[in-house]
Length: 328
Image 1 (cartoon, helix red, strand yellow):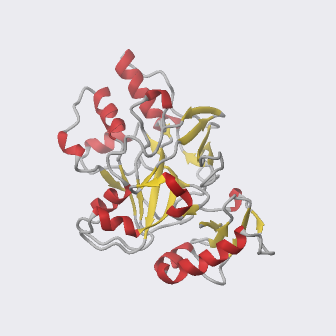
Image 2 (cartoon, one colour):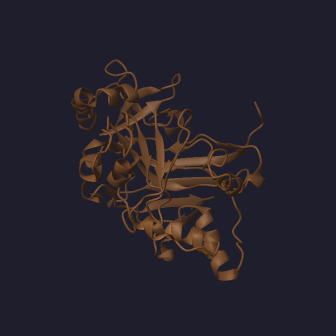
Image 3 (cartoon, rainbow, N blue to C red):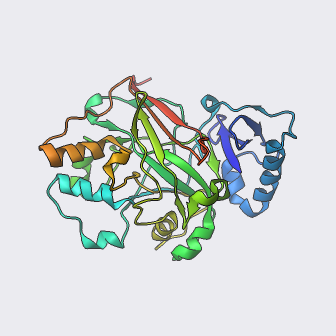
C-alpha cells in the first residue's frame, strides 16, 4: 500500500496512491490525515488496504492523476524525528578526513540526533536557505514510520512497529555544523527543514528488497541532472531500521507517527557514488589534502529516487531546487 498527503492545512489530506504512481484517491472521509491513520493503525490499515486494492485493480472511478507537486510530506509534521547514522563508512570518512579514529563503541552503539519535526517540506518544494556560505548539502536516506513503540523494546520486536517507509533528504548546512557541535549540545541551525518522498509505502510493497528491516535497493541521486550516486541502501548498513528504533526507544516510548531515519546511505565501494556532497569532499580531503567539489548553490537541483528490480519508482522522487530565502 502507498499513501500520501495532499497539501491541506497543517496536516495534509490523506490519499491512497496506486502502486504504479499514476493515480491517487483522497480518502479523508474514511480517515482525514496520515497521523490519524497511524494513531489507529490496527483499525485503519485494513480499510485503507481495501481501497488500495480496488485502486490497483482499476475499480475506482473518482481517482485523480498522481501529482507530486500537490503533495506535502507524507507526514507534514510529526511528533518525533530521530535520525541515526547507520552507515559506518560515512562516519569513518568524516573522522578520517579530520585525522580522527572511529571509536570502537560506534560498532554497537548507534549515533542519533533528534531533529526538528514541526515543519517538514514536500517532495518538490524549494530548499530555502538565506546564504550559500552556510554550505548547503543534501543527504539521501531511508526512514521508517512507527506506530506506538514501548520503551525498552528489543530490535526484534521493534521490527513489528515499522508500518511505513519513506525516502529522506536530510538537508544539512555543513559550514554551520562544526561550530554547533563544538558547543557540545548537538545540531540546530545546521539542520533546517527535512524533505520526504511523495509517498510512504508499507514494507510489503518492497517484496524481496525488504530484508532484516533494511531497504535493499540502490538509492539514486541526480545533482543538476547528472547522476551523483546509487549506493545500495541495504549494503554496509551496520544498524537496521529496527535497531535504530530500539535505540531511540531505550529510555522513552515512541508515539505513533515517529519517524526514524537511517542516516546518509553510504557504501564502502566508492564506485557506487555518494548520497551527499560531504562524503565526496571528505574523500578529496583524504586523497588531496583539500576538497574540490563545491556545496550546492542557489538554482541547483537535487533528485533522490529508488527503483524496483523492474525499474519502476517505488516512493516517487524527491526533486528540489535550492532557492535564496528572501525573508517573505
